Length: 320
Ligand SMILES: [Zn+2]
Ligand SMILES: [Zn+2]
Ligand SMILES: [Zn+2]
Ligand SMILES: [Zn+2]
Image 1 (tube, helix red, strand yellow):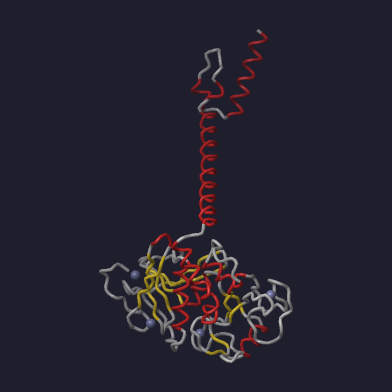
Image 2 (tube, protein in one colour; image 1 turned 90 degrees about the horizontal axis):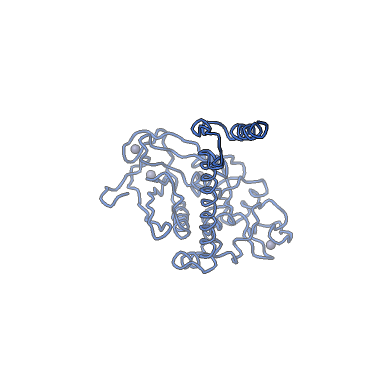
């Protein structure tokens, strides 16, 4: 949202949207509007991929805090907060599968529920019956990943917001926060993405059949049955992510430079290949040709035909 723009209202409940100014990459600021009781976010620019680690962590924290509020059911035919035209559901393919968002037909931006946002980032897993059983054993019960509402054992969808119950993949969330591995030594990164597994996938220790969501043996974090818990677990990375954003470690700077120079090498190779092709097409390799050949006609021939013609001419020259 531009600084001179007036405050947008939520198209679902009418309350003013809260504009979050979140840190993006390389000192930029990404602005995202959030309606806490509707559990909705509005992106003026259709992509949210420019959030830095601290920016994504702050957004997850805002979403987790908003889940303490009772959910406002979404009305059908919700509009764009800029032009009020009804938004349309758009399905996108991501590397994690299907995602969806509610886009303005005038391309002003898109709504996403918290659940849709997390799903698009590949941070949610469907719940196994073991996940459900363990979630229900916890003192705080089992919480909807979109609205934070309490769920019962038999709920196929959330009774408050209709979202499909899911667990947060904490290891993947940690990776999304820190794709460059600046905090790789932290136990939260240990993989163990299936809570249903009876052994910790990070160290192989058998997991006790009680509601423990990280491995007591190695400390690896498994899935979390709610956004608030996931945020608590990755919150420990906060100071290191902030330090990394301000001053990346020399190892990470080297990684970035290596990635850049690999890109340059690829570009150089491509340029050389294109030059060679252009040379071949313009007949540079056929220069030592006698007999007053029409080079213009030769240029329009495919390479193999030009070579064949050349060989034939040499043969004829030998015979006569
Ligand atoms: Zn609202
Ligand atoms: Zn619009
Ligand atoms: Zn819900
Ligand atoms: Zn373990």
